Length: 194
Image (tube, rainbow, N blue to C red; front, side):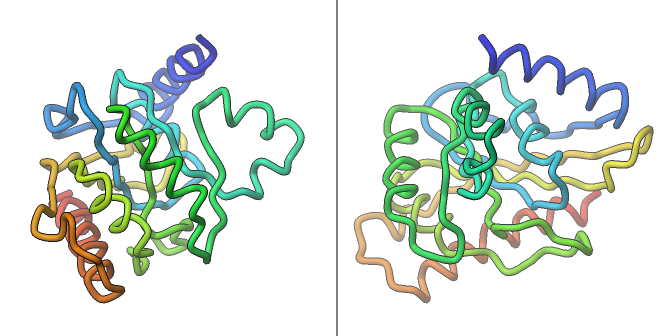
């Protein structure tokens, strides 16, 4: 219940304060596990991506957020779970795979942190590992704009992409970088389309 109330508040914020324009909503799977992957330019990005679908989106969030008293209570209610950045956090990866195997939606920002310049950063390979191990489609999403009040934010949602040629293999670092790179290329393509 709490999730849906918060989501509705954010929908109104994005609609009226940021005049969001969304293209490609038909690409969002209505059922089954999937990963929503977006570029990351602002604190507004997680609620924005969460508002794109009528399904609950579980987000990986930096573990520091769970150490802030208020957020430590609110984040689980919003279906977020902690991840240690700059390390292979096996607990977070296991949680992500459980979510996807139970047919739910996972939200990930492959860059791992916000871009201060709005230019894409090098993606972490964790997104590739999760996509390959879960064998679910990845939905690329590009956020275009600056989140200034009354300035328009554009969201471009691409067709789901999968990487079956990597399923079941013992994936090496180069392969994971390659898959993460392909995901970011698709996000970049959507961004450039504007």
